[in-house]
Length: 316
Image 1 (cartoon, rainbow, N blue to C red):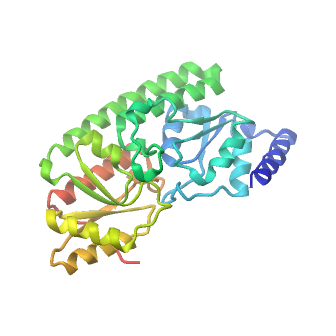
Image 2: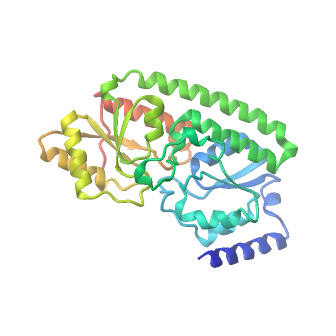
Image 3: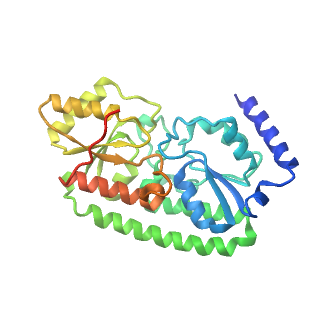
């Protein structure tokens, strides 16, 4: 596999070098940047402004844990002047591509400035750190700092512009963090129990005072079994948890199985709504940006757990 990836990279690099019109010139003199997930792309686009052309490989509803790079993806990566990815094994199936890419061009893990002391390493994740750091807004501010630095390293002539826009982004993220804390404060502590399809919300729970239960582990590569469903159903009934949540990047059948198991025990738990975990919403929608995604999730969680109206999930 590694040999084929290296060969594709060599071919793409040669094609880029021989092209009569480099990618940057085709994009209006903008710095071509490729990211893996949308959360990175959104921050990079905001800091870069009209100096960058940002493309995310993984769109709405895509699971980065299982995503494998296509030949077209590798070509996009080869033509980029800067590659930004999350790291911490989030893009597990793309690991070899990113490893090889780092030998050819700046390939930056945006989480590399987050101290290990701030990361968690759940036992089920085989000694690796939880990669879902964007759910703690303050931790994601460190990622924004790394994105700013990467853009300046790649295009130092426009460093002042990047720094100015990054300052605005930091201010907006500070305000977002304050809003999240204020919004969740309306929930009594005993209602702050978040049950989701996979264990992606650990940093959210730690930062904002929620107990988090994920049916699957940190990585969606591990599947939940019947025993996991039954055990979680028992806990929901015992604690009378009013709502559980599906995620846009994971099929809803496992959470629906939990709901059915709970009903079989004589208790009715609602599907409280759909959360954005490993991907943003569609472009042009409120959840199509990082800030909009966080706000959408928090509103969905608080509304459902406070006993308000529920969003009914259509069965597939």
